[in-house]
Length: 306
Image 1 (cartoon, rainbow, N blue to C red):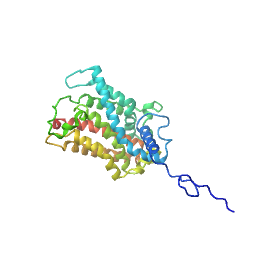
Image 2: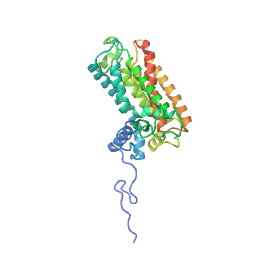
Image 3: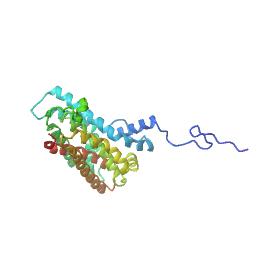
Image 4: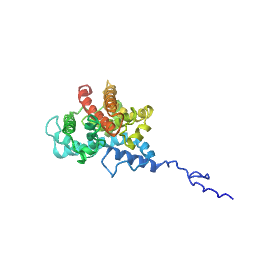
């Protein structure tokens, strides 16, 4: 008499155990952990130990992580402003330095490391963390690019005007935000990292995976499509439209978002063509492009937002 096959406790059927990944809180938590390791220098080996399903789940966490990074920028800027005080009427040099120290060491370390690789020879590096870890030689051109990126962002953050535009009348819809309506000086600090991490998803939606793509980037590219990108664009787009609106002009935020999208899309396409597809370098360089573009455009649009 033939021996009965064991019953799978997951499916209740005889045969091989159900190998489908479990959903629910553990899956979401693993996706969050994979997204954190992709963007931030935390944990050994980064996201290589995550399963394919965890890597695909991480798509949902890039925009929330960008929002948290923006909140961290705001907190660091505000605390250092209280500690160091005001150097000039419209300049916050030391608080901007504090934000850039946080960006260089933690929140944007991989983004800064990716940019010189994306525009350099394809055979130089594959891991954007390597130039900033000191385990690989940093070419003179790469040092210049990283230095210019840091200096440009510091200038743009230090030069954000600090003005009080008055509070809104009770009939104004913005009046009801209360504490949740940030001052103009804090808005780009919140929104620039948000658009930067969103740009990872934009770059993953464009083109195919390069031969140098690691498993996490390949999983991102496989998981992303235009409709999913649109869903993940709602939060940064809505916050930008709301926080950059004026009494008689609510389209400034939409125009700014369209410029960030156009510049980042073009940069992502060009870098993907240069490297033969999308990999970790190109998607993180696209994130750096979006973040810097937002700061530039915000400063340029400032006269229209007063």
